[in-house]
Amino acid sequence: MIDDEEVSYRLRVNGADHDVPGAWLGESLLYVLRERLGMPGSKNACEQGECGSCSVLVDGRLVCACLVLGAAAVDRSIVTVEGLTDESDALSLVQRAFVDAGAVQCGFCTPGLVMTVHDLLERPKAASEFELREAISGNLCRCTGYGRIMDAIERAFAEADGQRP
Amino acid sequence: MSVTVARSLDEALETLARVPQSMVLAGGTDAMVEINFGHRRPQHVVAVDRIPELNEWRSDGSTLRIGAGVTYAALEAAPFERLVTALAHAARTVGSPQIRNAGTLGGNVAMASPAGDTLPVLAALDASIELHRVGEVRVVPWHEFFVGPKKTTRRDDELVVAILVPVRRGPQAFLKVGTRNAMVIAVASVCLVIDLDERTVRCGLGAVGPVPLRAPAAEAWVADQLVWTDDHVRPRDPALSREFGRRVGEAARPIDDHRGTAAFRRHAISVCAARALGRAFDGGLQGGKP
Image (cartoon, rainbow over all chains, first blue to last red; front, side, top):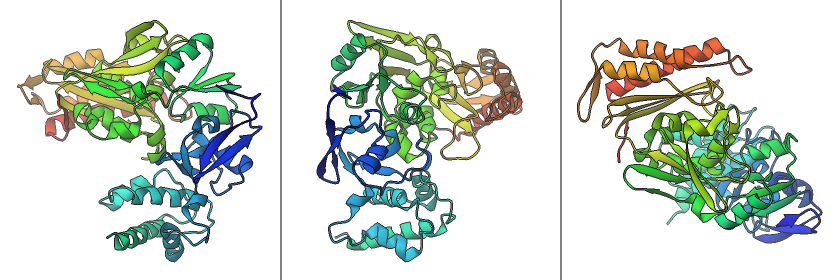
């Protein structure tokens, strides 16, 4: 059992262990990432799983970080948008596709969408545009109308297919 | 506040026995919203998402026992798509991929929101809820479990461990009405199940009453209007579906709220029930196959 009197718990984020000191145990993983661990890539908007801008991978599953209790994510492998690139800060394949397609306007939804598309690339390719749209239905964008985001997804798939042996 | 990340069923039950007011945290898709918005400030949380028994399922051919921790994402796919088609279809309408990756069947049941998407399916199939506490297991039929909006007969020290779902051979459908396709809470939902062995028509209604409802009068009436064979069913009168919908609407007990009016809900549930039945006749529905 973890309680507030204890100093901290530990989360494994982007391959590294991070102590979470002095946290109230009701904090969401999103709050912990942004306010305790200094990783503001996951965006905070709705805090109720509606917008998808805080999408992260927890043990390989795409979820909303705002709906994960930080203290209950101990011993899980958490990947955030900060973890998609290496030290060189080169863009990932998906990030490059978003830039090339002009799929970023205000940019607020972008980290969540990038996480969703990274997750999509790990799975068997969705057969139709309808399925791709369903796959991104948990990520709200209020700027683009999704046209260029769909374009970016097509580019990402094409690029990933090219890299496969 | 304190948090227990339960690694076994026993650990979860012992924690609930010791601190019965604990908030049970499964997928977090409802519970975390309550915490984030300050609607609940639990003294203790028991996280149950790492209990192996809760993530298992098995079928003996007639009953499917689905662990409470099985996610909507899992329910969308095989074997549930084949065994309990309507449940798979209902799961696919929940939230978004992110929500379906986290949210669980047991959470939907324990939360008992009138708009819970799986609840009309469990009602139509006549499912039961398996509850455990230290030293006791009991199985409660769905209609004795749901007693009001977000109210169930689960005791504070009990955990929903599994849902027992009869496997029924025949067409199944789930239809849901909301303001858009994705990320929407039901304004009205219908589950239609035709059981070719029992020769019954079963209709569960969601979001049109304080608890999931059935439409027993409409069900009995329509079963008498059908021509039954071993693996098919057809109506004597083609106008049957519309009248069935009207009768199903009479079983609804809707209210006006911010998502819709009672009148609209009754209308929507009638249209959905009629469509579901029509699709069953057209052969446009997949069936539960044991």
